[in-house]
Length: 169
Image 1 (cartoon, rainbow, N blue to C red):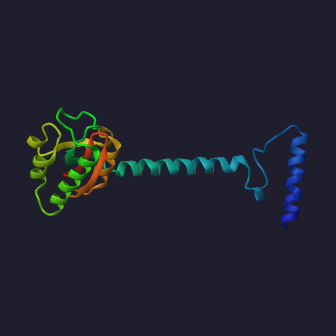
Image 2: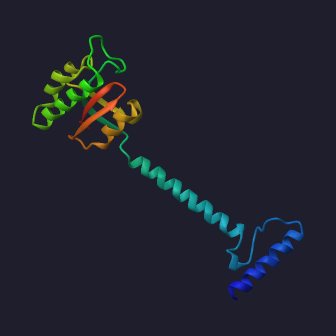
Image 3: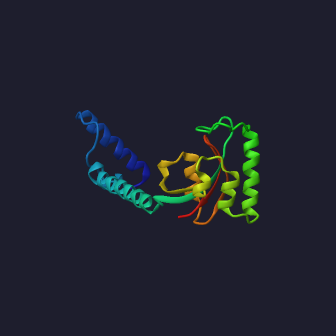
């Protein structure tokens, strides 16, 4: 059957069903794909397979990470302690300097003591423990979860200031 005759047959078939008061076909000739009775189960199976793949991909993702960080705050930082008077630009410059020290071989824990404005960070060495992605602000979580164990991030800005993150687990 040629394409032209197939089109003609389909037109006649649709016109006939419309005249009979039917607006859709539950089944159809094999050359049209068989209609809903044959295509619907295939579509359901394809959708189920897609959802199963998404679920499996989510299970493979790391659920938790461990990290330490240096936090350099500025006057507009959320939850900043009293006494923080540096501007955002000055805070960024300080964070860049602290990162350069780490990249040059300075110990992360020592850099936390020297640079971090987070209350209690010096005692903990900046350790945040193990946490889920949703426990942190998105900017911080995205950077921490992207690191491999032992890696140190670049400077990451969040509403709390500028972070340098080291993944520990």
